[in-house]
Image (cartoon, rainbow, N blue to C red; front, side):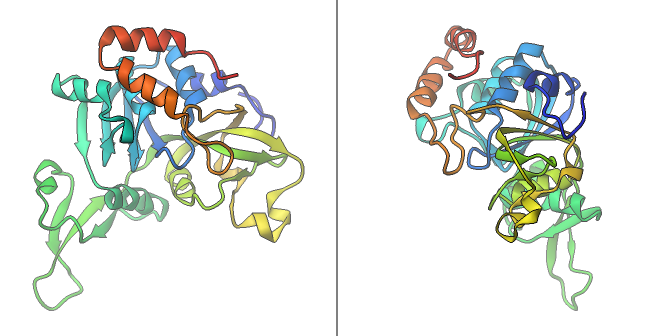
Length: 273
């Protein structure tokens, strides 16, 4: 791949993702890299292990429907107001993928542990829930700092192979503007490789201005950047554009059947105009 400071193509990023990658993906409010997702499907990716921060919608449902996914770790996979995620539900019911049920705080904590280079992070909100029965990798023990029995849950650090997300812009130094979406910084810190698609590349450096420095992810965390206008469509992107409700509703209806999903996928693999 070319230098970090020269944007690459979205297809080049997709080609850099091996089969069976532990791939971190963001929620629909954080910049879903849908152009990248379509490129992954064109490349014929298989065996992905998806880590959602903390849930996903159409992106993960599409990847599952296309047979690209081996496992999902998430608080939920849903189409939100448009109903259940049909390909996800069918795959779970058929036993075609492994679902690692989690919670929003636990998923964030696992990546926070990785970025802090500690082996685990304690959580309290999981105590009393039946999710602990299904997560043998989580440990319950008494607080070693306390003087009386006081259980806490330890969730292990998760080191992602790759994190990919879509952002509004990058600068000429290769820094990326993420604004208030600080969970994207956590994801990048916890990943061995980070690929980002952006709406545009702008002149200057975000770190030259106090107003933009705090909302920027530094270039040394990023392996490659691709320019993809409207790269989150049909999901939205912050203040730039809203989710395309009509497109999401059409997908949710079509994906209820394998034939409908295949037809939808064939018609929507091109980039939005």
